Image 1 (cartoon, helix red, strand yellow):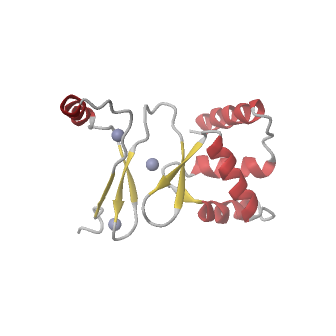
Image 2: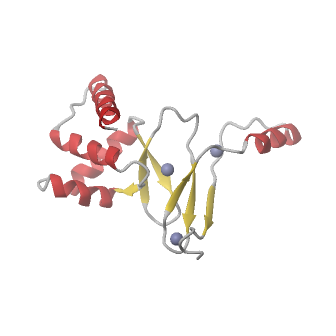
Length: 149
Ligand SMILES: [Zn+2]
Ligand SMILES: [Zn+2]
Ligand SMILES: [Zn+2]
């Protein structure tokens, strides 16, 4: 795991350098925290609170700016889970498209769905409506296993 993280940091460093940005210690701390929280779908405020523990001098404005920069560069992507917050997650280059999420309406837990399962549906729609589908977005709402017990 540690190796993967280093690879990712190196990759990010190169992307930043190509675009003329430096991986400053503060940006590095933010990126580290995003990598550490893969799958957690943090809001900017949550990210700020985590980073502040390791980097007390960091300001919320810096975190906001860095998050926008990383989003602009396609390193992270904004998620709208209809809970009124902007959440972010790393863009996984191995994924052909963004994965889907299960959202527990009771505790707010967000679970990532593996695989897509929508290809046959898309094929049906493309055939029936002669509509060329490029992408789709889908969220599932319900109760997680703990809340439905
Ligand atoms: Zn739940
Ligand atoms: Zn996700
Ligand atoms: Zn999908």
